[in-house]
Length: 456
Ligand SMILES: Nc1nc2c(ncn2[C@@H]2O[C@H](COP(=O)(O)OP(=O)(O)OP(=O)(O)O)[C@@H](O)[C@H]2O)c(=O)[nH]1
Image (tube, rainbow, N blue to C red; front, side, top):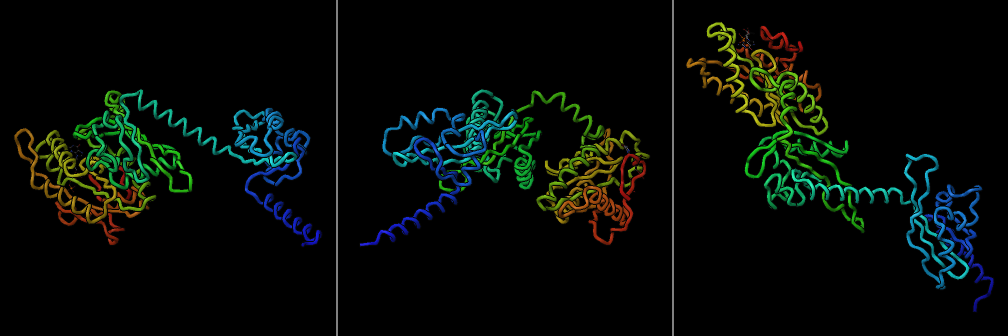
């Protein structure tokens, strides 16, 4: 049989351990008597309840909560069982004082009756959790409204890599794709060659960073027919399943709209500002804007970007022999050949009188040189037909590449022009790649190219 003082010491130790536990608990804990008088309160609970105190004290739990949960005193009084949960996860909205723009803080309260004379309150700040749940419900309502109410939207869930996560009828309505689209990248809605795998990820990254990413352009349906579409990508809030497993469900939502009808006037304005009037290619301004955007992105996700500068050889002689209008027709002929040679994702522009530039995203020097050579050969082999007269023409090309966008489009175009100068010096109708030995070389400068901003 034990001696009573030993029992007492053990009890004390247990009590200390319990107090220690209460103090260290990651939630707010308050022990009170049946009338709410506080016997023990841990630091988190004190912090959470302090804004409710009128006199700076934390004496009575039910008095502290009477403004935000007036029914609580009544609930306690009516609770007849000897022990149990009086309330479970009751939400208490703490008002943000006079500041109407600030969101109220939300506490969750679970109140336990331990025995006839003791209550235990468990308090947690659930403000963020509640806001997130509300946002999820709003998103769902919003997406549902789009899915059921509006006919020209396709709503596509994407996984973290941009693959289509699930099929729904709106996808078929706008694009004609069936369930076999699931698991394929969302670039299937873009023309072949219209988007590189890096661009696909760029847009997801942009959406994650800015909250959304929007682009507009030519899109294709499953049957190959084209339409003018806008594509908005937005990140979806993560749904974390219980048990800490990886987040479930789509990571992004893509809203694809067919805006062919609305396009008209805005496209005409865009054409006027960004298209070259003679050839219909991108103009110098469009080239620099697109190149600036591409190089900024290529720096973030390191990858090479190439530029090819093309210049028609002895073009003055063509003008002189056949007349200026025939010269114009030859330039249109060259523009057509450029468009046939390059991918949809490449930016093909007329940047000077008889000088063209092509920006090739995610392309290294050797690959760009191959395409440049292919174009050079095709131009040399196929004379332009102008009013029944065949006009032979050749082009010289300079190729340059940056691995990470460092130096920007000015440096890239300057190097391509230095290589082009070397090609002209080397006898024309040839392709030269930039190399460090050309760093101090002059750039190719066409006569009558006043509008061009060559970097010497
Ligand atoms: N038809 C026509 N000619 C143009 C246009 N823009 C520039 N040119 C002409 O292109 C010619 C360019 O001449 P140069 O810079 O001497 O170059 P090139 O004769 O092609 O000689 P290399 O480039 O050295 O092979 C000039 O005669 C310009 O008038 C245009 O829009 N239409």
